[in-house]
Length: 79
Image (tube, rainbow, N blue to C red; front, side, top):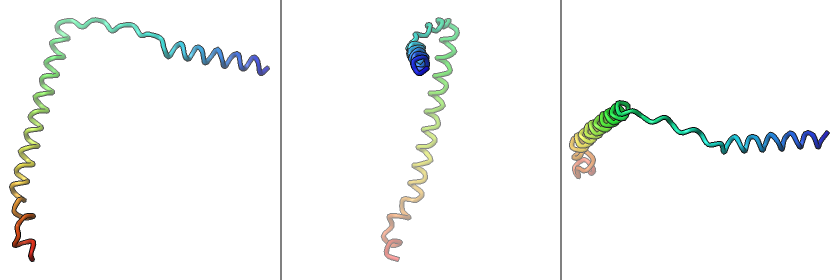
């Protein structure tokens, strides 16, 4: 009985190992329209990220300029 179970488990392990190393078929080639659409989408995302970064930097600079004198002012530190 133990030999049968061991043989079945060994076969299952071999099958799992073989299935995990199987090579998947190649993806179908993209058409020119799909490539252009993907490039446009990537360019739009890059432009949006650049705009968001610029807004965040402007906000940080405004915050720094607004609070610059508060924390570094010697008159407020002595009080």
